[in-house]
Image: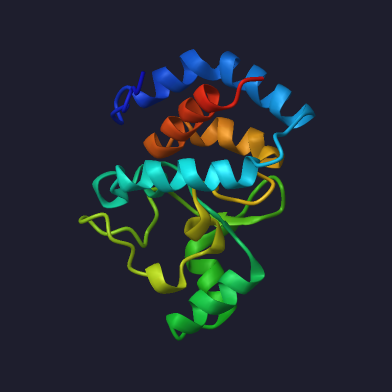
Length: 166
C-alpha cells in the first residue's frame, strides 16, 4: 500500500508508524542486509522521481540544518560577509554546541520554495533526508525524525519495510 502522505497528515501518520518503524530499525541495525546501501539508493531514487521538493519545502519551513565550519566559511563568502557577522546575523549555538539557524522557516527560503543559497547551501541541506547515505542503518534515529518532516522519507521507509523482511 502506497500512502503518499500529504503534509497535513504526515505528522500523524509518522506518529502512528513510529513504534513499528523503531522496531524495524532496531532489527535492521542488528543485521543490516549486505546490499542495503544499493537498495536504499534505489528506493531513494524511486521516491524522488515522484517527489517535487519545490512543492513541499517542509524541511526548510519546519527544521533547521546544522552548519559546519566549512558551511559557514562558504556561505559567508557567498554573501561577502565576515564569518562572525554571518553567525551573528543568522545562527545560534544549540544545546549540542552546534551552529543552527536562529529561527525557522529558513531565512534563505523564498515564497516560491526556492533556496536563495542553493548552490552554497549547508551540507545537511544538500543531503536531506539522508536516505541515500552510505551505511544508512547507522542513522536510523535521524530517519525516524525525518519521516515526520519529509513525505519522500516516509515513503522510502514504507518501501523498505515491504522490501526487507526482518
